[in-house]
Image: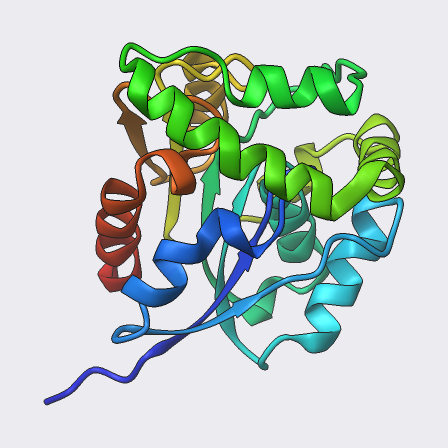
Length: 219
């Protein structure tokens, strides 16, 4: 029996666009009906979540990186009956927020890797995304993070199959940050991506596709 494809909403990190998930959009097409959420129009997490929910199917899975992860958790808080499962990449469970410039965010997101070639490969697309998104949207997204409310209620609302993943070289969300979040979500799976920074779908596309495929099949 062929398993029906799961509706899957992918959400970007701050200053990123659909290129962040380009490989997963293609590689997961056989198992998921993939859509990309717009986080560029609003300056609060609640408004971002509401906008994505308004455009999403009645029930769906959601995966987000960093800012996208916080929006995904807010979506669960707003509409817990609509979210089938949630995957959080480079997402922290604490309220500590560090203001950054566009350039500073980009430098942290593409921090040096053990593999200099990979670092060079990642920095080009990351800069291209930042250029396309532009400083106005970046500042809007930064305001949303700076003003984000206590997410304890959003975390407590998660009662679906959950994946928490992080790069071992992530300087924005450290492995300890992500592990702390996973321990607050009953039954959550934790995955550490080796030799990876903050933009894991771009940096480790094959591995991210693999863990998402397993998560989509999880009961």
